[in-house]
Image 1 (cartoon, rainbow, N blue to C red):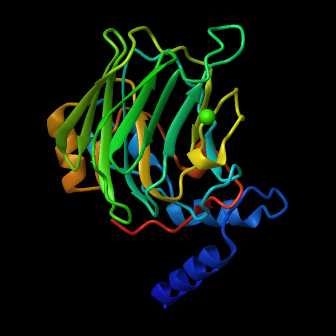
Image 2 (image 1 turned 45 degrees about the vertical axis):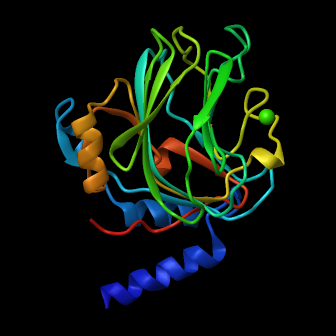
Length: 255
Ligand SMILES: [Ca+2]
């Protein structure tokens, strides 16, 4: 009975989505109830533990309206790691992550970013972006982690647990207090999106840590999406984000 109840909820969420509308408060609440608590945050630093499961669908191609904004305050970042399970539906030029800093600091809309195309991955740090060859197939889900070292501008890209490519851009601390957006490229703080840079696909378990994760930790997360190092800065749990346009939260698979 419980299973059928969940299926009904999932079907409803799939049909109606959980988009930007603030007119229907029941959908975020429903999602939070289904996802449950986040007691895992209380465990000690760097210990592996149960990982909060999140899952989002970006269903629309070539638009500037579907995105997620992280509401967790972003501190200055020196070493940090982002990971997630990415699948895109097309071979376009897709921005997964766009972090823009506020006017009054460096006013930099390319402070940090990750984008990909069918045959390269592009990282931006400190206003400088560079791509390196990397082939990712559409409609295939990849576990992707990027460890970043602001001291020398280096980003190590791990695909399915293995180091795949190094992208070296520009050194310098990533300024905090910026705007962290998933699914669009910011050309100004919180906006300036261009449709050809939008993300269409799915994203699961995206999160950020304020350190470079060890290769062993990344490999373990690839092997088992239900565990992760507990010292993360944020996940995409509902209380940490705002969701816009047709971007939709979907019920994550159980662990
Ligand atoms: Ca742009």
